[in-house]
Image 1 (cartoon, one colour):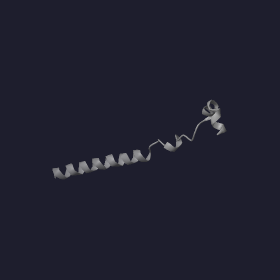
Image 2: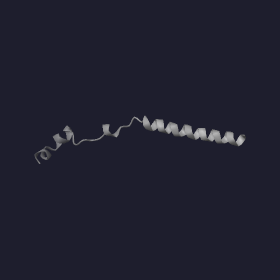
Image 3: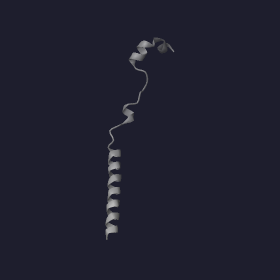
Image 4: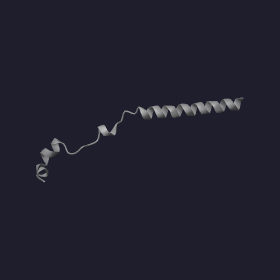
Length: 54
């Protein structure tokens, strides 16, 4: 009986850890597409006027 309770506790704990990791992974707020640089900005163009002529 004691052995089956230990197994049950260990299995439930593992299930809890996996489900928490799944929830955190699904709700992670970092979205790399929002931070993707799309090219030089206006300050770069102001400092490099020769690059606009190419």
